[in-house]
Every structure is written in C-alpha cells, then in structure tokens.
Amino acid sequence: MNDSVEIVTVDAANIDEHGFFCYKSKPKSAGYRQKRDWLEQRFAEGLRIQILYEDGRSVGFVEYMPGETAWRAVRAPGYAVIHCLWVVGRAKNKGYGSRLLDRCVEDAQQMSQHGVAMVTSSRVWLANNKILLKNGFEVVSQDQAPPSFELLVKRFDDAPAPAFPTDWDERARRYGAGLTVIRSGQCPYIEDAVKDVLEAANERGLEARVVELTTGRDVQDAAPSPYGTFGIVYDGQVLSYHYLLKKDLLKLLDEHPGA
Image (tube, rainbow, N blue to C red; front, side, top):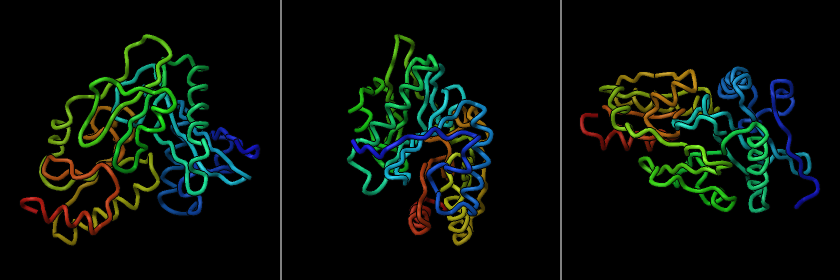
C-alpha cells in the first residue's frame, strides 16, 4: 500500500477546503452549487464523506449516511447506507476502494449500527457488487429490483436485514401520463441530466415536468427505482434511472408508443 495515501473525513467545517470529490474542477457550476447546498443539510442528518488522497491528489471517495435518512430507496433502519463509492483513473486496482469501505465499516461500528448496506447495479451510475463481495458483503437473499439492482449488506449482528420496497410498478404509475423527470440534489451530475431530458422533450414536442425529491424519506417512499435520486418516467414506465445522452433519450422516446 502506498505510504503517501491518507483518508480525510469531510464535514461542514472543511468542505470548502476538500470539496466532495465530484465536479471538483467545476466549483462554479450549477451542479456543484446544488450538491454543496444539499450537503449543508445532510451533514446534520449524519452524512459522512471520506476522500482518499494519493500524493496529495484526491483519487476516490465514499459517501454514506444512516439508513433512516439515506437517499436510496431501501428500508435500512439501524444500518449505514452507502450512496457512492468511486475510485478513478490510475488509482484503480490499488486496493483503495477496499480501504474506503474499511473506513466506512469502522465508522458504522463506532456508531453502533447493525451493519452497512449498499445498492449496486451491473449497469451504470452505481458500483457493481464485485468489490463488496470481496470485502465480506453478502447479497440480501432474493432482494433484487428491475432492471439490474441488488442490495448488499455487511452485518454486525442478527438484526433484520435491510430490504427493497416491492411496489416499483405502482410507484412509476403514480407519475401518470407524459414525461416526468424525478430529481434531487444528491448528485452534481443530475443538473446536466435534467437539462438534456428537457431539451430532448422539447425537440419531440413533448411536455415534461420535473419532480424534486427533497428529503431522504421522499426518496425511500416515492422513487421509482432503488437508485432513487434521479429517474425518467414516461407514461407510468421507467425509461431510465441514470443520465442519458440526449441522442440516446431521443431514440428511447422514438421507440415508445405515442411519443
């Protein structure tokens, strides 16, 4: 392990010094400001960010918070829920992801949590399950959600395991006819994602509305996918839970009956 590696806990007192890893080169962008404002409220709810530095350069991070206030559509009271785990570029394959997970697990144990949980996906915008399985996490038995989500947990005791809701189709139908963008301030990339959706809708002559999820409870109760903090719903069906380039969204809309 590189001796020049350190992990820094980011909180309300030092966030302007360290940032929050994502969009670190664009501190004046709308996405950065939105995330910065979001964090001001979340720190008071128990959110933690750990940033890993190699030779003085930030190369990875993990973000997590108590399950009661987590911004993922899971039921995980008493657990720490990881939102994001990311190591970039040449820093990959050096064990840094495992090191960040270890810090999260140690923190959760110190807070007397039942364990640590994370939503994974084999697609994009979320880590897949490989690094979690390598570090002693287990797939919650039978707990999967469309199109590619799994819920993994590392348990410290015999408390009930976290779980996904089961009413995904009903959740999507609640948004009704037309094109709806579900968003929040949890991810700085969402600002551009929403802009692309609205531009695509305008090009196809479709009216689109934006629904803002403003609390972790909103996400847990109303999000149409486990990712929770962003989604595109059309006529009561989920088109995507992640950022789509405008050309890809236009293709999806053209394939949808009635678009």
